[in-house]
Image (cartoon, rainbow, N blue to C red):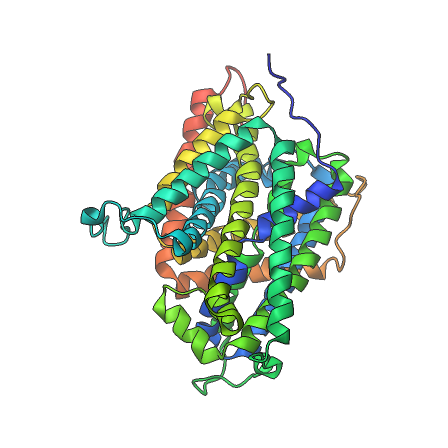
Length: 468
């Protein structure tokens, strides 16, 4: 008989690996181009990275206080039950399943497949169906050879993660070390290259001679936030961390600091190698990656191969860690009768195998649904609703549980969590204005949680019980 309790096997080192592994993905290679297209200035692009990093850090520090106080499997789902109620917690969990984490898995796997395709060129598949579409928005069979490999990756990583969290975590550590080595190579060779002009990275003038607007900055920061997205995922495995109340907040803070420093160095290298006008053209073309074009300036074709391999390894690692952590949310929901009952069972390795299976099926469907940028904009739109809710939770818990022991208290309280709340609200409104299609589909997927709440509550409610 498998144990029906999750095993506490993660120390501080592996918590930090989860934090960094969940953050480091495709954004560090791809998102500088769409940011350039919005801001038209290398200096302002760096400002967007800095502001995005600071806001992400403020969000992470606010989250760390909540996580340190309430650490448990399920992350925000477990926290929101205590801060708000089961209905709001369910809306988060359902949104995590329908868009936030599954779309992250899909988009990362897609970029992995794109990078591998650049190296080995997959044979065409189902080309006769490429123009088939749903509502003229979704082309499920377009680039199906790339999508097929992305689906295979999701299924393979799901199988690997059925054998235990610690096995998956050590695989993530090995991948992360390779990614760090690759990014350090880009930084070192990028700055040392004769093609590099570091002063070019700090030019504040725009290519269109127009001032940078507040809305343009926030739209560009959607891209930066995708690159920083993922630090909260470590909360999903709170029930499997040793000394979770101390190690989770400490791991979040250390991990986010490391990533911010790394991103600023890497993007300064890109901007010193490529003029802003070139990055704008890369975004318009839609079939080039900024990191590849930057490294090609000093390594040519060899640079293209190097970056394609590095992107593949990075997105492999991030997809892997996201798959590990996300399924714990649905497991926690199912244990309470608020998800499909089979998802609440552990396999012979004390892993929520059915949760992994359901997650992989929906993630594979999302691979077929849209492009990388469509998926990431929907994710950020949805996730900042809950980042704001977590920051508000800092204030609520200080009133509800004033005397509870807090291993970590957010630095800069009350200003830091208040800034996160304000930014989250503005980002939500600005995305509806600047990205209405992505916002609409994101809202639809989130709001399907309302009828599902009533369905699960009625179907699984024990006789004589009361739902909060």
